[in-house]
Length: 377
Ligand SMILES: Cc1cc2nc3c(=O)[nH]c(=O)nc-3n(C[C@H](O)[C@H](O)[C@H](O)COP(=O)(O)OP(=O)(O)OC[C@H]3O[C@@H](n4cnc5c(N)ncnc54)[C@H](O)[C@@H]3O)c2cc1C
Image (cartoon, rainbow, N blue to C red; front, side, top):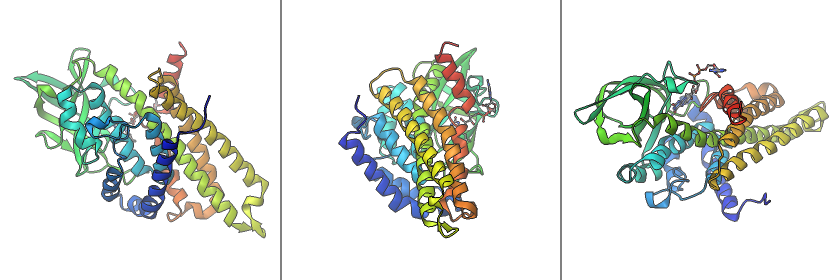
């Protein structure tokens, strides 16, 4: 076994960490406060080649492995979740379906703009009546005169409504008991996007409700085989879970780093609070859990890179880091005392940003269902 990261992985970590600390940290609070999408930062991430890390170079991506992608998402989330989810949703949910299931023509049409970060993509699975039970989708698409005519709605969709958004891949019912994926370009008549939804966290990320009213797209916008939509979205979610697990890991690391620094600096009873064993034990527990979480996340990514089955490990990593980030951010804020409750302390933003990690791309309960299924239950 070799637990050392390669030089390339270490270099990537340093590059992303440096960028996140220099460029994102100083503006994160303001972006969050103003619910402002980070266009400038996305442009710079694109320049650094971080908007399409695991997409092959022939389509304009970075040609990196899943582990590189996981490390980048971890490092971005350590500083700011809104930026991290923008990259993660764009890559794993927006771009990946086209790479995995698209025809060569679809890949040539969409991937160069997406993988380079010039445009963004979204994945529209969730509906008001179909959340955890995503197969219960009610959005319909009917093939009429060479076009798919879509009617229905989606909710909580990331990256669908920015000025850079190019398209959304949606699941739709294309027949009795048949779900297919369709690419719907932004600007298609009948495709309407709500104002940004107001959220507890991830406030600088773009989250929308989508509605489709007799929205017609060419027959060729079908992604993969007709009727393969259910299997396809399960595969997309398996991969996406590694990125959300990386976010749980990165958020926990960020919260721990803030708490450690604060504990060394803050004095009460005549000494830094880090000298109190009660505080030391909390930091020690956090460090243990973060190490365990990192091993789970990297192993899931490594399995995927080895082209071995990884779905169970991805669900385990997502579940574990979701819950671990909750425990860590809670203790980290406690160590900050009243200051941690104030907006100008980053820990308060991390605290609000954490909760959705236990909900998005499958709730904790759904992860347990997936794991139980893999256990043969
Ligand atoms: C900020 C944000 C961004 C998102 N981005 C996207 C996106 O880009 N694309 C997209 O498609 N979706 C997106 N989502 C949707 C997200 O994936 C769903 O919210 C999530 O899958 C849960 O669905 P739901 O909200 O309908 O909850 P529900 O499914 O209604 O669940 C409610 C509760 O019931 C529990 N539950 C449900 N079924 C069971 C069961 N069988 N056993 C035990 N407990 C159960 C759940 O675990 C949960 O606790 C986003 C959500 C948020 C909040």
